[in-house]
Image (cartoon, rainbow, N blue to C red; front, side):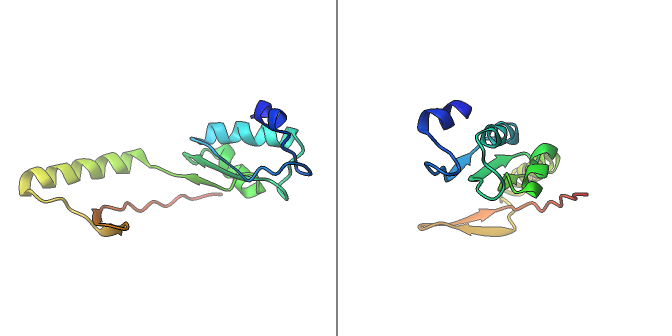
Length: 119
């Protein structure tokens, strides 16, 4: 990220950087550090995304240097997946609790609810 910032002349007072979409929170933390070193602060930080809700990224979200993170709780997701597979094998139907719509279709969906508690 430091090289991208340098090569493209991004800076808080120069060429604008709107967003960095990171594949995970570890990458987002690295991007955040590079942006801080380039002079960015919470006031002028670009949109930064991540995934996994690592503690360091939660702290960055609180500080205003990361915009969001996607939380995937694998234990619940794998358990629910097995339940859906077993229901399908036993009854020939896929259970769902919501319908997602796109421009062409209504897609039966199973949404899991999570609660992430922060201190």
